[in-house]
Length: 179
View 1 (cartoon, rainbow, N blue to C red):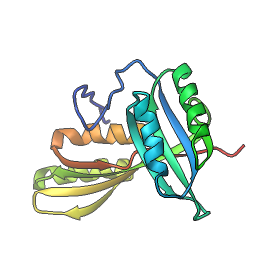
View 2 (cartoon, helix red, strand yellow):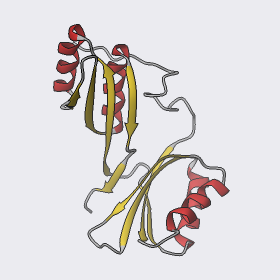
View 3 (cartoon, rainbow, N blue to C red):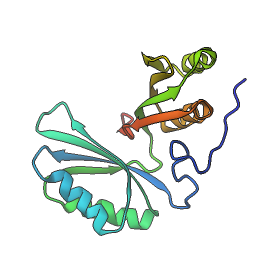
View 4 (cartoon, rainbow, N blue to C red):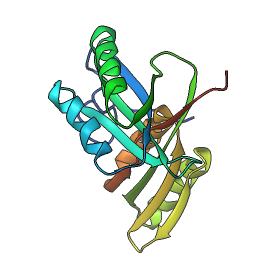
C-alpha cells in the first residue's frame, strides 16, 4: 500500500492549495491573431490576478485558438474578470468551468535521481500511475506522466523522496463535458 506524503513547502507539489481563494479554470476561444495573448494576460495583471497556469493551442479551426487559464479568486471578482474578457477584441467566447462538469489533463516531465537500488521502486510507482520512463541515464530517469492535477500531485509527492532534479508542467487543459 502506498502512503501519500504532504509537503507543504515543496515547489513541485501542493502549489498554493493552502490559500483560501477558489481556483477557477477558464476556457477562452480566441481568434488566432497577433497580440491576443498579450491583451488577455494584461487584463489579468491589470486586475492584480496571478495566473497559475496558461495554455494556448489550436482548435480544429486553424483561425481559432483555445486558451485554458487557471486563476485564483472569489466568485464575485472572477465574474467581473469573465465579463471583461468577453469584451476584449478577438475573444469569441469565455467559459468559467468553476464547479461545472469538465474534463482536464496535464502533462508533466520530471527527472528523478535513480541509482540501481531505487530504480525498481520508481518503476513500480510509474506502473501504478501509468506513467512512462522516457530516458534512462546512469543516475537519473526522465518520466512522463499525464492525468488530472490531483493524480500528478500524488505522483510527484511519491517521487519527492527519490529527489526530483528537474520538472516541467504544461498546466491544465480542459474541455466541458458534452451537454
